[in-house]
Amino acid sequence: MKPRLEQILEDLEQATSLDHLQSALEAIRDHFRVDHTVYHWVNSAGEQYGCGTYAPEWAAHYQEKDYLRIDPVVQGCFQRFHPVDWKDLDWTSRAARAFQEEARAFGVGKQGFSVPLRGPNGQFALFTVNHNCDDDTWERFTEVHRRGMILVAYYCNQKALEFEPGRSPEPSQGLSPREVDALTLLALGQSRAQVADALSISEHTLRVYIESARFKLGALNTTHAVARAISRGLIVV
Picture 1 (cartoon, rainbow, N blue to C red):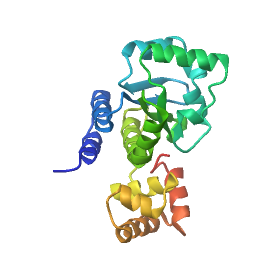
Picture 2: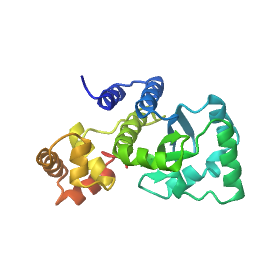
Picture 3: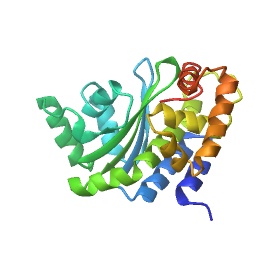
């Protein structure tokens, strides 16, 4: 039997519609045993869509009120490249506090962990895990599941990019899925030991993937390989 998260990621890779992405997010929520998981996508024109487990009434209300402009999670993550715990965002303004109270009335929990994601043509997205629990419980949860959530975020965004309206398919550059996974996690700031652990491989095997990707990209070193992969749209961080 494959580990549950690995099976979910494989199912996600096979998704062919937003309905499949929605089902994957529900499975991810159940795997992490949290209240909500959400993927929120915004293109360069400000058009947005989302999949996830928030109440449909909240999603409709959010768009009707154009909360994209004041949502501290969106505004805070747009300025960052690394995962963000909601407690580290600025909730001090009157608008932010009112927004937070309204979100909680619709069942949004007080704890959140969001991974900012970027793609070609100005695309910006967030993968969010949301829950209602005390701070100590949440801190333990994020310590245990941080790497898994980052990996899930990457897979969701890669799949969602296929569904982006008007998107032309990117020409294949020949990187294998494992090479993409390795470079993505390195781009997110993880050490080689952490990446090897997240991918359930040895550091020696990871080195093989990295060197292979570096050769294909014509890169001088690993940092150069990551930069080239990002600039060509081969990985999304």
